[in-house]
Length: 465
Image (cartoon, rainbow, N blue to C red):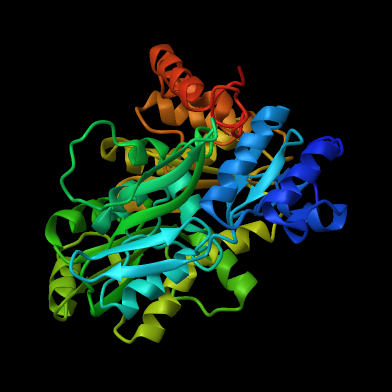
């Protein structure tokens, strides 16, 4: 596999290794090259790093001791959850020590009176969703990597996913956090009060910080009432512009809207080829809109009325049973694995203003072909919140021409170069397209305050001091 590969890491300092074993125990300091290799390659296959060791603390106290030891030894740390990141932010590209948080895996209890759940950082998103359902609630964030993505990683990148249009992103669910800062100090504010204006909201600051300020070890999450009645529809659209216009209309006219996802013909055909699934509709369409409505009562009449008012709908398949709904969502969620089957993709998740969203969806192929005619462009995304995933295959992992062209075009129309994947190392050089020099200076000042020696994920987001 052709990847962006880092040089081999030097062996871990023997004194540091002995001290880490004293903290976490011998079985939880991994140094064998074959074992640590899986912690050094990102999910997309585009970024391959190397690490002298992987340390696996089992509590916040152990995390604090590990951070303090690494600070004394001048050793940089890359925190890692499920290693499902897509921008090179969770792998050791510069020989850093990897801190795996998967042992912090306690979910719950659920506070039924407030609709809140406490979870440690290593708990998977699927486990949080299950704990919430068992207690009669649901957790509002959902994404395709739910079975392996961890809550700590979701917080680190402010993950979005399929239902931001209804419930908001991870930051909107976050009521408090426990974290170990780069100084080794522990901060904890997990009371979960809905109204609490006692100073800075450190949990909001840590959300989206990508491990550059410290290590989130536990969180307090907001839950929402269940929406047991669900209906989904796959709409075959005249073209992408009609699909975008329909999505925007549904946000205005369908109160029970819980997801609205854009796909195009090439992506659907690739998914069917790779997975063996039949086409979602009898005839092919230039664009597809996957719509879900949900509520306490059957939203089917409301969805039907809303769809009937749309322009550009050429065909539709409706699903009422959970298995059939899941089958429709599979066409959307399988895009990632289908595209990965073609090689390591450049994954550019962007947000666009509504006024230019349809135009940009039509322009991306031309923007890429102007700098890389050999490349293929795959578009899909959470069109209800303006998030389009621009995936590019057929170019080398370290060929940044397409990244530069796409991200500059997005910034030129007032969009964001990162919607939900983070900045990582993949987008660090372009952060100035969205953030002013004054903002970047403020970011750096915050990092110096919370991570005085710059050991926390030092090559992610900001230029190392």
